[in-house]
Image 1: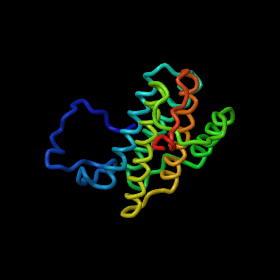
Image 2: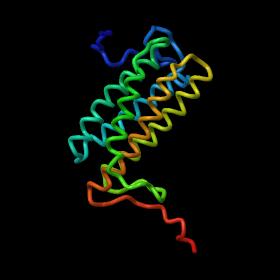
Image 3: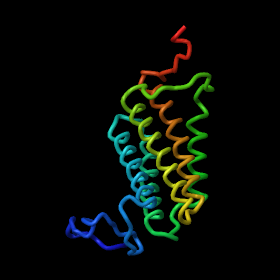
Length: 183
């Protein structure tokens, strides 16, 4: 286990730099810090979903995802470190398939909404998509394991399916985009 913080402020970042997990100092606006910061933001948004009334089957999935997102943040914070693996991605796919099996096929675009939990899950999904974009940006400058990008891609897909499930289970239903509203 790494160092424990007994003092929260260190003043070492007052110059606009921060320390990576390997001890290197980088600018707080570097692509690496932006990537793992956005992963942390997505994880926080998942925490907001967990603060809502949701079925235990979804709660258990999201708690496991939060731990993996923390692992992913560590992977991105420590250049060369591996924490997300193909088995993690496969588990997301299996979970996605299980929740998607009972949903009707999509015929329309869905707008964010469908009750508080579903709306919060949509927010988590969009932040996850941004995290994916940030990790791709990082990969143009530094080595990034492809598993990190694939994990975020699959997680955003899973969150979309969970949005649909939550909207239906809440009784609000999915909010469909009405493309013919201007006619």
